[in-house]
Length: 319
Image 1 (cartoon, helix red, strand yellow):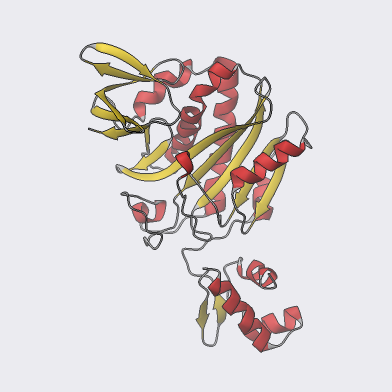
Image 2 (image 1 turned 90 degrees about the horizontal axis):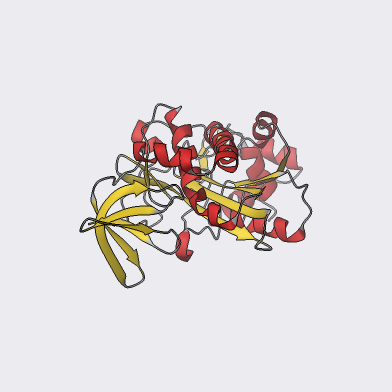
């Protein structure tokens, strides 16, 4: 991992000559070249421009950790890294160690995940410094039954944050974020520790920001902020907005329950009033999506009978 300090220098998105880098690290130009090779072998592209030096590609916008910590006020415990296995796992391990103040908010954010995952263990593709991969950890004093709507609350928070940038996001029950009918991001909620209040809640979010090439082998239709807008985005700015909204909306959820969110869910529901399939393993149910109830359950109209579908290991798909 000798190349990691060099990668950190390149994360300012400026050009750095081999000569300056060699002087900075007090090593030879050949060593710098070797470290650049190690970075490239790890899957991170580095551009080399004659007369100017090394620079990260435009679509890579590494997080500015100093700005993030300066902007986010409150009792935060930061776990910020250029690379980690999984931000959800980082927060989970911290909760297991029980080293947190009861009102602390844990933020784990990284530029690259090596073991990122979505629901049902699916791989979440995480190219370096292109998209957002982060997790918020909080201790919530709520009954277990009321936590079922939390993934929808986080989805609404993400959508509200994106609206401030002039976007019109959509949500697919129970945990997907869409833009122009294509998947933009996903949410993974997990619990850690004793199953009694307060619950240690882990809220993981992945959002496509500057990724424009499907080098990851993603099979479904997907979108990114850069694909939609035609320009790169400041990932630190987007992340800050997302975190502030998630905390605000989670506080409302803790005080008022899911009821106020049930009222605004239809504003974002991608498949509202449409025929949908609810898939659970090999089982498929069909009906008309009527939105959600006051607990975040999906309301399915099946031959004029209304059935409430709980979240968990189920997927909603257009019929």
